[in-house]
Length: 230
Image (cartoon, rainbow, N blue to C red; front, side, top):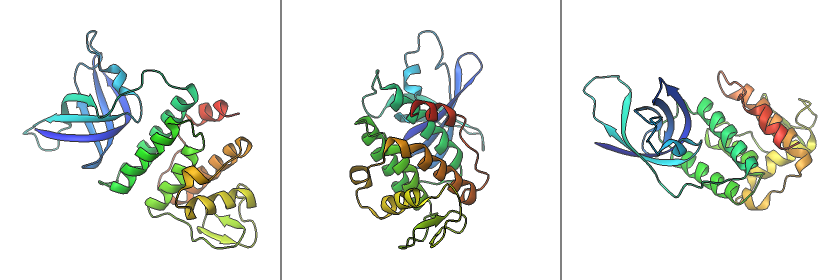
């Protein structure tokens, strides 16, 4: 029996009672599992399926090569909060969907796993800049960090700072946030992003991903998170 621990990225109901789960696990990176009877009437594990919950899984051994791994037990790795701020829940949905799209080919990474954990901790303490800082730091971890310099404007296409603005989204203010987040050793504690700038910074992250993440698509939950923070 194989034991794994990971962050839930998505759950897709399969039939009346079963579910397909996408995880980023500590041991294997991105992985997909099949769980039976999760939606059965007497099953109490449905609350576990909230995006970015950290769960422990044990897997049923299968003799069929290439078949989807089947979960035999599913338990929380830490206490799961039954109540949460609506804004925090919306952020969790958005980030989980974002990660589900860009981590599909990622193997085990202690840096990614730890960064998700740090982000969740800060969000749990109502730091509503945390998702923006996390996504920019994730670009750095994935090897897409721009070349930082003292020039005022970040060019998202060539990932360098330049003397003149190259993309309307990357104003001097937004470019400065990128530089500060990338260079800070404690960005979640040190970087303050005014509420009026959050949407602009998120837009810049999406633009950057279009240039550097193959086949990147905007998460469906983008509109919801933008409404929450208006």
